[in-house]
Image 1 (cartoon, rainbow over the protein chains, first blue to last red):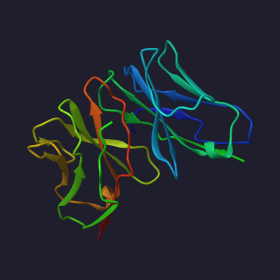
Image 2 (cartoon, rainbow over the protein chains, first blue to last red):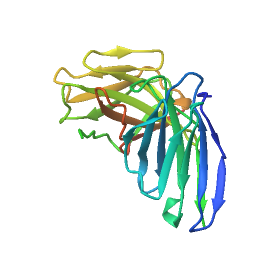
Image 3 (tube, each protein chain N blue to C red):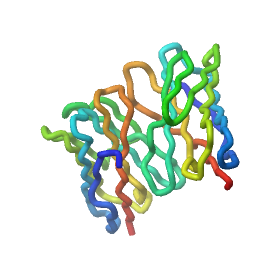
Length: 112
Length: 110
């Protein structure tokens, strides 16, 4: 158990809908990262937050957005969902901006 | 971004050492070398990282070539639990933005 929690574990929704994925980092960790893992694209970095502020951006679509709240938990919002958005979404946390990352168990999103 | 090249797959026998290679010929002086692994149905897990010198921890050893253009992750005695996809990743100093490649799928045979 990495100490990072993600909810929900599974999410099934329809095209065009909007969903929110939630991540609670390890106690004391200030950085949160979001990754997408699909069969054809592998593990892709989406975005990083550090202490509430966006720090780095990867291959995140404009339809996706994230934020980190004062209590350090983070949410990833996915809107206008497409079939290709079906994937595992991982959250990771680290103590600082440049430390070892601890990954959560992931949220499996299925878009029908 | 500096890229890494790893074999798609490797096999090992249980209780034997495993050497997982990674080529990173375009590495720059400030790039750190990280290794993570992903066990089936789990999120990635940190294994080890280094800059120039060889590193050891309870999980593995990291051997870094003198010119830093390649590195090798060493599992001293593979167990069935070590069957996973192993990722070699470079990160620039001052940036924890990790770009995962396809990794090496390690199969451990009993």
